[in-house]
Length: 417
Ligand code: FDA
Image (cartoon, rainbow, N blue to C red):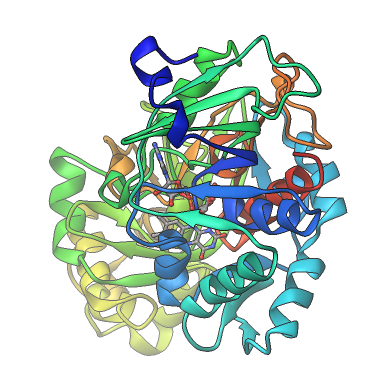
């Protein structure tokens, strides 16, 4: 029981089969499935609206899944943990649901599926499904505390969890934690799910911001700041003992604080403080070879102007200035052109940090998968307690993988809770 004081208010109490904390992607999917099974389901969220991250995702068009979703697109202490859920509710299942609602979509690139119209269509679809499944949704509602009633028998009406809300308390047989993680605190992201996990002795890994812009200081910041707003097709690489080699062929964007764009967001999930990354700022072009070839017909032009035919002009100027090279192309020997080629095709950088949870799309790490049942998402040590979505240590690459994890983990939980 929560406390004598709270127990006195028990006349207000309502009993649910399933209480889900978090009306995000995972929580809503779980609610739909549990509701369809005839379970009495309540979803609680402290936000004013459900599915806010869905609404703002993918630049307002929601990259709702990826055709190529597979476990190798996930980071976790055990990436294979997601295989079972992804198989039972796959990207094709979610696409079918989207098509059933006649939501128009397109593949943007690399298997990434986006709505043609607004991301709100996905939120509306989920709300409609929840309504059809008889799910109750309570917004603007904070959970004060959760306790487990150890004395509940099979035949009692009261659930095994007490959930203290602001003005009253409720009980549930199953408690599903779908409260997401720490990214974008301004949108209501909290470490609530981790606190609940720890309360029930469910282990939580270290967590850190991921899919996040990287920042620079000192000399490198002085170099990149004037390039803010410039985007190039790049390959960004990282290598470490723990995570091996990672490499992403996507756009890179210079910002006033450092680097962003898909290739940088992707590599940020692998990067750790003190590590170096390598960026090819002209993917598909061998800059030193091209400059050597151009020497015969463009030799009388300045090296900066010729380089500007291959990469954005401001970037070209920065590279030649940094290399300390001036004059015409014809004046440069092979070693100098190779030096420039190296700087463009294999720029080695040491980020100072990242923009942190303020702008991170996701949180790396979370509730340890070894403590959960992969088929149901139930905590192995606590009957009726489930963790789904981003709160779990399962982080996808950029490109629709994180929503697919939310749909899949929510769906399998909904079959069991
Ligand atoms: P989610 O964070 O969506 O939901 C958790 C809910 O719990 C929230 O509604 C929150 O208010 C609520 N909550 C938290 N603490 C609570 C408490 N104590 N009490 C009550 N309620 C509480 N992924 C992708 O695949 N494609 C994309 O296009 C994008 N784009 C994107 C853009 C941006 C800007 C961000 C920040 C993130 C993305 N993502 C993404 C990632 C994606 O949004 C993320 O992986 C999912 O929203 C995770 O879904 P969950 O349901 O687990 O958490």
